[in-house]
Structures are given as C-alpha cells and as structure tokens.
Image (tube, rainbow, N blue to C red; front, top):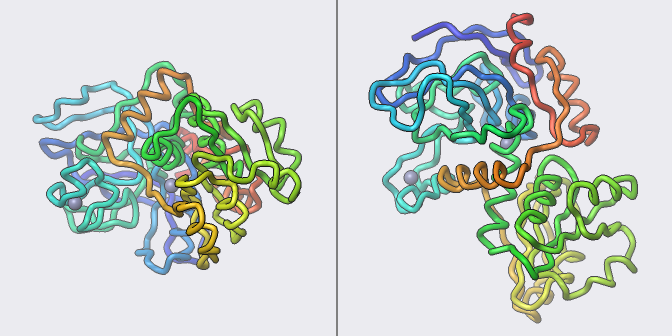
Length: 351
Ligand SMILES: [Zn+2]
Ligand SMILES: [Zn+2]
C-alpha cells in the first residue's frame, strides 16, 4: 500500500475536506495514474450526502478522472509511463457474465465495481474516487485519451459524455434524422454536441429562453421553449429519437407525443419519483420509452476517439478543490456552464 491524499467526507451532513488514506500497490495488470483533473457529477453529490441510501463512509467521490500514467504493472500492454489516461464510472466487473462478455460491463449481472463507493476486488475495501492525487486501476478499465483536446475539458466525457453517446449510438442516430435533446445541463450539452457531430438535425428543448443562444452555439439546429404549447405542438409526431437528460420531475408525455411511429424516448436523467406515462401515446404509434446507463469500456474508448476526431470536449468551469461545497450548491441551482472540473494540482495546497 502507498499513502495518498484526497477530499472526502465522514458522514452525510459533513462537508468534504482533506483526507489521507492508502491505495493498493500496482499489481501486474494495474496502471497508476497521477490525477490532473476530475469532473464533478451529480452522482458525487448524491453519494456524498447519502441520498441514494447506500453510501459507505468515509466517502471520496469522483468518476470523471483524467491524468498521466506514473507506474505500470509488468503485464500491462495498453499504457506506458507518461501516457494520458482516463477512468470513468467503473473500475472492475465480473468479466464473465453475458453482459461483460458482450462488452457491456455497465450492465454486469453481478454488479460492476463503482470507481467510488464500490467494493475493491483486490482488497475488499471501499473504493475511493477521483477527488484524489492518484488512483490505481486495472488497465482493462483505463481509457486512452485523445492528445489533441484540452485535458480538463475531456474529464466530463468519462461520465456525461458516455452517458449521452451510448444511447445516441444504440438507437443509431445519424444524418437525415431529427433528434431531440431535453435539458441543457451537464448531460444535455454533451448530447447536443454529440448528436450534431453524428450528423443529426438537433432540436434542444429547454424551459429557459436565456439558453437559446448557447444551445445554438453548441450545435442545436433549433431550440424549443418547452413551456410554450404552440412551439411544442409544431413538432408533434416528427422525431426519430429523443434523449431526455432532465433529472427533475417533469411531464414526459409532452415528449412522447413528439415521436414518430416506432420512435424512442430514452431517459438518462433520473428523477427520484416515478414518471407517469400515458400508455395510449405508446400504443397508438408503437412508441418506445427506454433508459440507458453510461456505456461499456470499448464504447467509452470509441466515444473518446470520436471526440478526438471531431474536436469535442465539455464546456467547463475549473475550480480549486477547496471550493467543492460551493460548486455543489451552485450545481443544485444549475448555476454552471456546464460542468465543474477540479484542478487536482490545488489538492497539494489544501492538504
Ligand atoms: Zn457521473
Ligand atoms: Zn459481469
């Protein structure tokens, strides 16, 4: 084991603060990464505050990790010292179930190991995430990063990017299609950029008229103010696919009615309470209502390569780690364009 520092909390009602702990030594297939930046995801906040009622303390969040390789095990083939490397939401899975065999580790039938708040296979201890100086991960769960992109702005691709990329690919979004993205936040702004780069006609739905200009700059061909029934009605029955990125309670039936026959509305935002579905809207046009969870490792690599080719990164605001609680408060008010990223160089100063 070796000494590491990070930012963690001891209980649901305490702020995150400097924390010292140990990481496992590098095994034969492990990669040790010095973390440069870590994105701030809503899941970090939910977990730190035990809002999903499954948090093990101390809790050290962070699963949008980018950095440099500083040590590799003897059997590592994908990475060498000095390479850029990324880690997303998973650090291990069973590797043997049908989903793992198909490269869909996020749907591992035995449960994937989360980058934080999971159980580390090698030690049996709780996993600690990316709000830290270094991390050790088996190379099978480490991603290669494009060299041509701003590294800090790559970090959110590891969760927000793949969460939107995977459903867009699964439902075969491309040229000639009309695709809706609901909500312009951490997820939605990536959905707009990716769907645009895939060649679709992109329509962004927002409740905020002040987001219209931003959405168009990010790649939306049209912006619809979802509170306006006339604007919504003009698009009835016309969409090939809609990706709903809204985590707050909202009426999804307004969006189901905008789908063509056989088209799909996929939810990646996760409202706490059940959503009411008007079943007639599904029946009469054989429409589909679906969900999607992040993406597998191979698909995450494909997404990063795609972003490298198309020059796509997240829109970010860089913060020092000492400001994490302020960032959480602002995130709850959607007061960020569009993702906070922690500059991990500031950790040394804080600890
Ligand atoms: Zn996340
Ligand atoms: Zn599995």
